[in-house]
Image: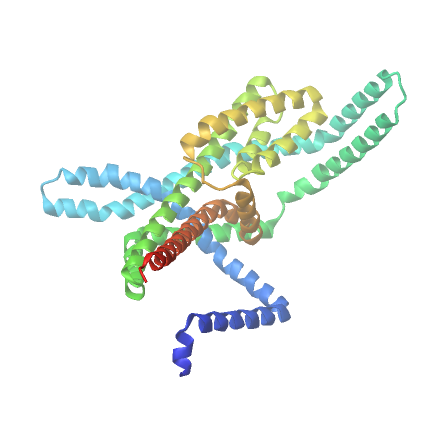
Length: 402
């Protein structure tokens, strides 16, 4: 038997790929520094593309809305074929331009309203934080003096609070102001966003052409059944990413606005700063709400413990409203993943691609989970069918007359 015929056997193929995998794994471990450097280079190279994909899913619904309402619906009622063709030809560039302008108008308005107020709040908090700490320490001393028993637990608690306040004070007075003075990080951020926006606009401008090219490649190199399956999967992927990303941004905006309104009505200080932080962190699944609540509660606790108590009660009510009313209507149905898979996706995506990776991690894991689940169920069904076929063969052999 020749080598080609031997390689066609399933056992030889499995052995070949196993040996190849072992060799590649050994070479990778022996050159781990080079592999990690290559991975970092690939991550840096792919980040603008991921930002571009993010812009695609944010701008595409608005662009489709303008195309349908401003161009395609009026064109369907036109009788002049030449005028109709001109209207449809202008639909894509004009709708895409309007979508980009509307996006920057919304983002620019939010930044113009929120950022100056947040900077002013941070400046005020940094300047007055030491006085807040001293007042809070005085309250603790009065509380300790009012207790008639000299308990060691109060001494331990007092020492722990002193250390926690010292750490918080060092963070706010030393670390927090430096966040607004990182020129290199800000420059890289804007350059990455600009490149991503250009890629996103290019993809949206000719999205039907790109889709046809992908379909042609699939039809050329894959069997018809597998090609159709991948096309269905691509449609599911686009729908999942679009609904999730747009829903997360909308939900974060609504939650931040509701938090600001509630804190303003309750008379809590630093309402805009804390609400902005809660809205931004809410885009991170599972751990995001906790990341947003803890700093705000600590700031209010130092100013007045009663403020912190009312704030926590309000956030608890707001989270119930979000989970039962806002999330199902804005984001849609649940992604269908358990908490451990969502946490794993967020951890990997955030470590590899930062904030963009966090946003794209959950829908990516949703698609991977669906593909893996369908493949597992298919293999189990085929295995059961083979087992039933073998059992029927044995039964027919046993019932055959001798």
